[in-house]
Image 1 (cartoon, rainbow, N blue to C red):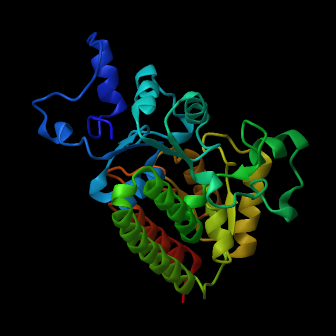
Image 2: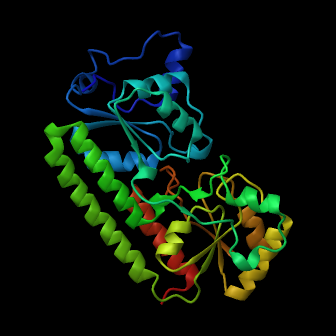
Length: 326
């Protein structure tokens, strides 16, 4: 395995570059870095990939994350140092189509093990931010912008918010780790089995907790929860499309106000990493409450949980309250 520093952030790399340091390497006085020669060095693109790498890899991996806590992953721009860092890794774990700069860097990198999470499960097209009855009032151009990514691909990348699909990805990651580092294959398998149980329990909690609710419709800031909604028989109505920074049309806002009345919607959900201004404006105008539904694109001190499972459990409680779970 490569001799590498542990959890060195992009900020630290940039700071070193600003100081004119020619290289950023493990120092002999840093015992944790010097002792990592037998570990699998994994670069994860953003938090959901980091969580899988850490849970499955355990003590046998060093995980470096390209997206800093609190940074919106869709907008990530890689520095030259981060790109070089990726090339030095044993493996890179990413989700193709979510972060175009990462996709490009991975394609150009000669890292031996490239693990694309999008290829470990089936991505789906969840269409535009409204379902069929709401297509009126939008021009074709508006409809396309809300339903498609910048590449013109309508496949929804937010698979990690479905515990079942996330478990499928975890299994693929485990197999890749076992192949890349066969000396620790038994440990990776044991860790993967433990993670599968966690995700299975989480799936059961969502299934049981959302089985009997007063409403099945929930409003979100951006269309991140399509897989979760489909899995548990709910309908997501997003203010924005797959891009959390896009702006809704006046027709879309009016449509949501009308739907809130028709479907008994009580709450507009917003998230921690993007502005809640539009969500709060809609809630005020429609007489609704607001709450957080976390798309888990990063863990910060504002997150309602310490890790993926903790935040997902908080999301379940929020949905139960908003939908009137019995």
